[in-house]
Image 1: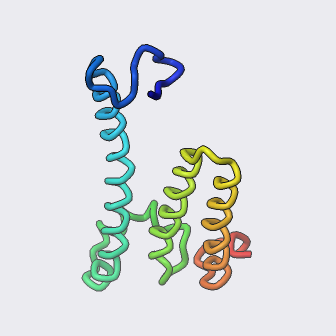
Image 2: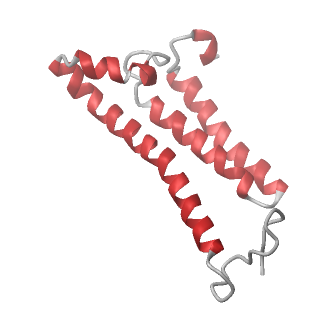
Amino acid sequence: LGTVSEYPDVICFNADRDSRHASMMGVGFAACLMPLAFFVSVVWACYQLPVRINDGDTRFLENVRFLLFRFRPGCHWYAVAFLSRNLCLAVIPALNDAIMQIIMTALIIVPFLGATLAWRPWVLQAANA
């Protein structure tokens, strides 16, 4: 049996007692959909970018400028990589073991450091060093 310290009377995954845990899970699931929807839209925008540039769609470029202004031309894909890294790092505190948190953080940060050094995607050259 598990519970949360703020709500000691709500027993997790116990449908026999009450449905408050199910409603909490529903709200949590809905809250997770918002950042995932943003991530999917960023992937779509980065996929569409070369096509839209060839078509001369300046309105599209104005709409996604906030994603692209920090990356040099040709490295627009790094916006997806950057968000993927941040999404993975945000999940790490859910792990209960501190050693595993440190290992997972290193396993995420080190490859992205290597990618930054290899592709140098940032417009600001100091960020690439």
